[in-house]
Length: 92
Image (cartoon, rainbow, N blue to C red; front, side, top):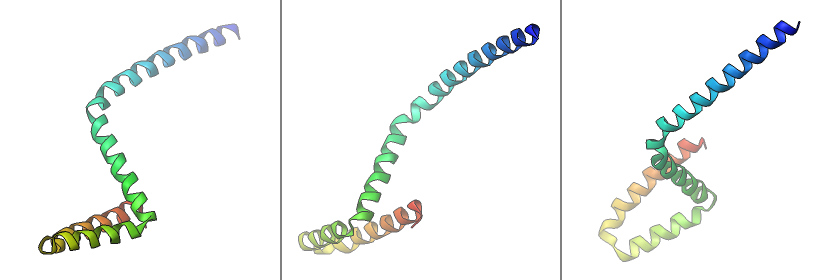
């Protein structure tokens, strides 16, 4: 029985060391993506906030239409596409 426990302890220590090495390798692989993922995370947060406060989108559209009537249609179309994309992304 003692032999089995010794073998299990050795195997556990090997597995712990292997997991540590894998975590380090994964951290190095993910590092270039960290900034992009943070930006995407902020974008999702903004979409969720706007989803909870749709009056902000209407207000922004009205301000945009008032300031630049010629370009308002173009910006509203972009906003609508982003709104639909966000809703699909969040599963609503």
